[in-house]
Amino acid sequence: MTKPIICVNLIMYWLLIALCSLPLPVGERLVYDAYFGPFRIGTAILEVKGVEEVEGSVCYTLYSTQGTVGFWKGVFYMESEVYSWVDTASLATIKMIRNVREKRAVRTDTLVVRYTEEKCGVDSSKQNFYVVYSREPAYGSLGLLYWIRFSPLRPCTVMTVSKYGLGYVALEVKECGDDTVIVPRAVRDTHAKGVFEIWFGEDKMPRTLVGKMGFGTLRLMLREAE
Image (cartoon, rainbow, N blue to C red):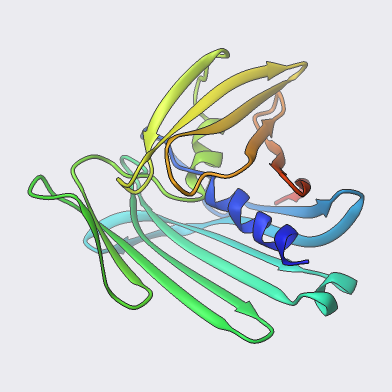
């Protein structure tokens, strides 16, 4: 029963930021319904909260929250939220905090990215606190959605971006009718499982996020945009 809920987090995790300097729509709020097969099991919200200084960088504050609803909340209670701070010039990740609440557990993970030419790798000596050292811009969750909407992507192209400096992900751009489909494909990532797609309409609005796993398909479908 936990797999569909975990898949919601996996979809959000694959919304990786690509390299570009673009203004984000501060104040925008996107609300999604989560479906596993024909069943609505939860909701997800994406927001651009504002601009603030974090770790010495001027950043956009991106926020997402997800959770089960109704019957599914009784079967498997889960709520999670992610704060992600990305540099306003490059959209590279500066810091991320993720909180997950379940029936019997509460977990908070913090990740900070240090950009340096001297070394690369991960320091995980402190529990639930990770410092990533990277020589190149490293991209995390949430920002790709906004970057794609305002970028001139060409169909039938593949871009390769760094994920926190720990691996690389290829973003394949396809066309399907009136939609543009972005398909993240792992190039070097030991955590990659399943197939994930992001569907954008002609208005560049992210209408559907799809996670195709071995046990079924999860869809996040846009309900409203504010």
